[in-house]
Image (cartoon, rainbow, N blue to C red):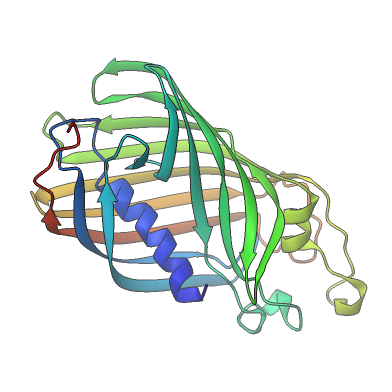
Length: 275
């Protein structure tokens, strides 16, 4: 998987969320769309350097009973009740070349990271059909894709989400707050400095398991016509209380990410999701 495909995975997630709609059996079973967008993020949590990408690509929305896309990404839904859902989902992050990140000069590159694993979603309250609070608990294995596949650890991200939509499905807004916890594997991946990579300015460091970051974000999408939707997001992260805040690779106490994009429906099925 290349840098291009890593961003493609991220763009697909945001574009799918932009086209997510309440469970409606009258919607098409599938839609073929083209998405375009750009994302800017820290090179890694706590980095003072940034990564940015822009891309245009086609993708598919499928509203099956198991495979679906919703406000929080693309997932295979295994269990659903009125109050809770259990699914298998994924997330992706951009790679970073050490030659582009001053703090990691001379160290191995950070490859594409794909996170995959189970997620529990629980509806806390829903005062209106199109708005409400929910709690999410994803546990994900982190896989690095760089000259092969290597597991780099686990993350756990308890998250509180407020979802709001207008009655005519013109606006879709999600706000969220979460904490990200990582085992020693993923913390080593970001913050360990092995003795052979130590320099007078970058001392050796052994990372430990614990808090990676605290995150808050807003995602918004607006439907301009039946075929076109635009979307954007902003995320703020704090590393002030991170378990490895003393690592020489942790150079900032806060970070921010942002992205914008659009999704255009090229074709939709005659068959409806209820059939």
